[in-house]
Image 1 (cartoon, rainbow, N blue to C red):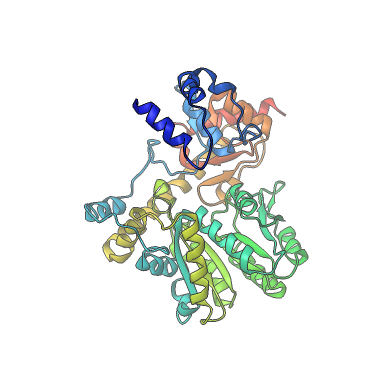
Image 2: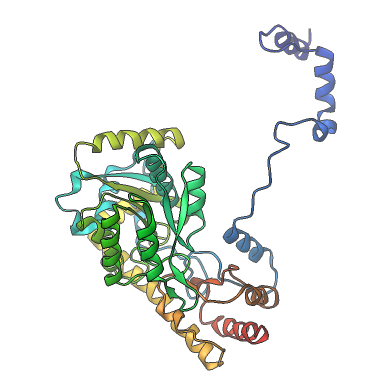
Length: 439
């Protein structure tokens, strides 16, 4: 009996499915010829939409025009348009050479979790540590996902998560895939290209008591428009009146202004005001650890006795989702934040990166003014962080993309990290053409 016949005999005698030897052999011979015609369980799977940001990035990479400029993806670039590995990260990597690759605990590296909470909340967390639980997560996206699942499971049924209009598109995706309803609150005013503070407050007052509000810690994505400290205090007043729950999305601490404490003002305000709250931290932008997927989720409770229970449930969700977090990025962050010299170097580099972005803002504004581009462009320097919401219309964006090979989102959002001294004038020339030709 041949090997194939022995295998066929075993399959035929199994308890699971009857097999026709001849058909099986013939099918194996003809499988490559007929596989495309076989029925499938997956015929009704629809084609998903292309991610608007990654889709633009893909188009940029496929473009062979030497003038092309990518202002779509939110990743830092140096003055030469190159990715930048922070010196503090490079030094930490040297120290970690040969570190073990064993599984981490389900909730991550304990010291990383402590340092993450301390970085965000600073002295505001003194005396509150035992009412806080932090777990390592797959960057900010993973932290948001774990937190939203926790909200669905343990906050009152029907709790709605409110997200700014506009916001990072993945916020709504995360809510949808986590089985929780999301809604919008007013945020950006296209007329002033600034904050619609009145609309924001009105929507907070109109929302059902006990709603969750996703708030950007700083450097709002995609608009670059942040509330002032005075406005944050009013926001906290209204949220206290309504018993709303803040969920801080912390993607740019230190990278927005160059000052870690200034950028953390809103989170520390809510903590000092006695809110129960959530925070999702990402180290993609401020450490340049985009592909390492390094972040943390922190939940603050009024009571210490519920923290062990909360941690146990978070660990169960993590275990079922990805078992345990990756090691390398969290070790890099822990190494830097545990060493005063590396921390000082990191802060210096944050100031340099944020300083370059501020410099680009001013140079773009100066270039547009020099060309007498119609309209008021002061919002470019009034906004903060990696992005500017330019106010360009879809037809104007199409001109930039199709005629000048400058890639940006259809909303007019520009990642300023993609601009430098070599292409700012080219960008300004293109904006002049786009604006004047569509008037």
